[in-house]
Length: 342
Image (cartoon, rainbow, N blue to C red; front, side, top):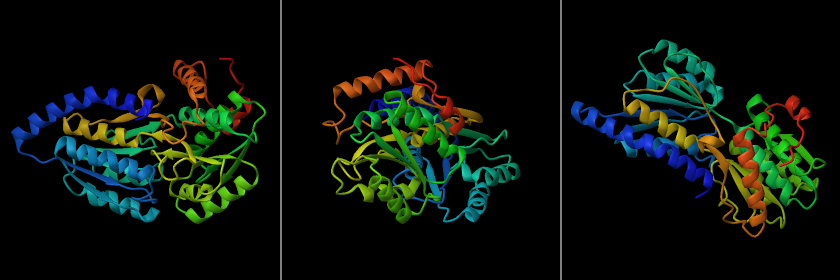
């Protein structure tokens, strides 16, 4: 278990315990069964990334609170509002929308169902019955970029994004800045798939990046990013960095690390609050300090990520938490970024 994962569990453990005791007492007395619902983004279950992580959190909430859980998968964007409406029409204690693409549809459904509690991952919906859960992806991406710069032999690394939107540019900007913190002259190549689902195009673009001498590719592209894992198979000395979930075991030894975003913890926490009859509303941003963002523990790549590199990463992590380092979130901020002497 990575330090970030351990921290996330520690941060949440006390709150979850108290919530569980409260929730169990109340619902045992009332004889009511809790219900939690989740609507996936278009990548769906099986993406081994964003949606799967959120689903793991929902399953955990079901076990903790003896709740019934239901998942509706979105095959395309037109499915968002009907799926949310189906759950809103039933007696769910919490309904979770996975992904910023659902923001407008969730807003409309939440207005029509003010008696329901909703949550959305990666977007802000300013309604009194909605919890907006966002993450400081630039923090974890900065660490990923720093590690890539420590490991590269060619001084060329790459970022492979899904869709070129502000959210994914946070990953891109943080990654490039982290690399420049280690090597200001490093070359960071950037390509976007134009999709979060097109695995074949993800592989094709990752192959192009590797052929252009990038020997570490950070794939922040949802299900499309799985193409990068296919591309790195058999490429001795080349690596990918996973995203959102722990993807280190997908191609053991060729995945340098994964930049984990604990959507599972966020989902479990918001369900726990609903279970205690204190549903979360408003905007909550989670980062390194909360244990909600971080790198995995290099279990397959310890020979590459040696003790000296891990110590350097720890120093950078402390600087990020303290505010001494401020990762950029846009390309404009990246242009103005200057390394800090740690």
